Length: 124
Image 1: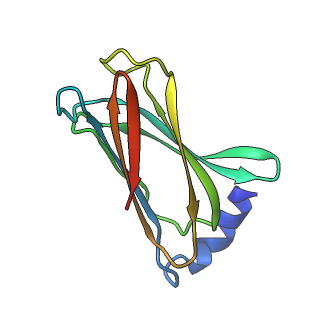
Image 2: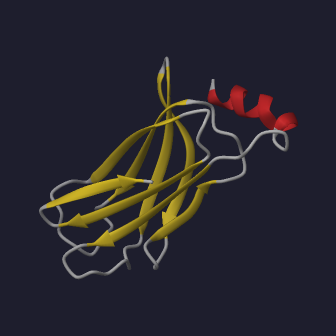
Image 3: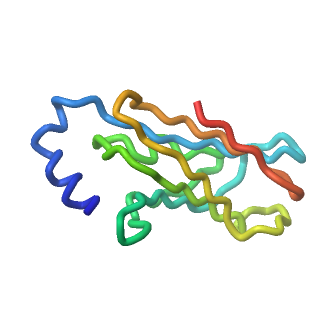
């Protein structure tokens, strides 16, 4: 379903504003952003979650422009940050961040602040 929506947009990609989804991760225990790990962006369809993009959070703690070259269909998305690869001991294998893409917003800057005992998310 998402593939069809994205393919249908190929001819109109320059007519519509593009969405950007970026993420930054910060280790609250030591103030470092040097947290390399994998992230997965998924779209909720009637059949369940469908992969949209995979990326790696680099040594700077960022996955800049996780999605930047297409207009995302409106709907519900889940960004999963895999925490097992981090150099900190956390009790959760991944952190899911669920958000909604709307027609009137193009940029989604997601900030994740994480520690061994919890995390907080901010979406600008």
